[in-house]
Image (cartoon, rainbow, N blue to C red):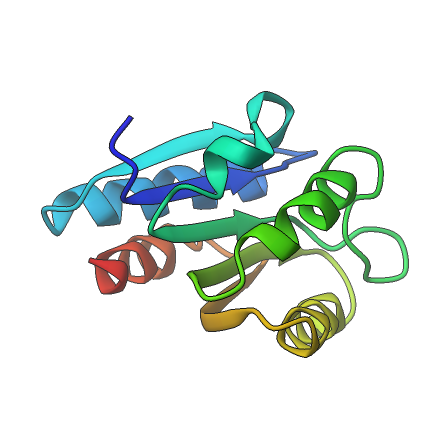
Length: 138
C-alpha cells in the first residue's frame, strides 16, 4: 500500500473494472503509485488516509450510483475526504452521462474537490482515455 492514490471501484459487467485497471496502469506508467481496490474490499477509514481518491461506479437504473455496495460506501466516505483531491469515473450503456453530472453536483455541494472525471460509454474502448486519466493524476 502506497497511500498516494486509492482507486476504488464497483463493476457489474467488467467495464468499470477495466477502466480502473487502465487508470492504475497510467498512474504507474507516469511513475506514480496507486492501490486498486474493489469497493467490497474497501475500508472507509483506510481510504480516507490516501492523498488522492479515485472513485469509479457505472450508471445504474435511472442513471444513479449502484446502491447496494458502492453508494453506502460512498456515503460513509464522503465526509472523510473533504479537502482531498477526488476523481470520479465510470461507464454507462444508455443515456448521456447524467449520473456523473449528478454525482459531481452532489459531491461539490457536500464540499468535495472534484479534480476531474472520466465517463466512457460501455461499447467504447476507454483504456487509452483511462490510462491518460491516470497519468494526469501523477
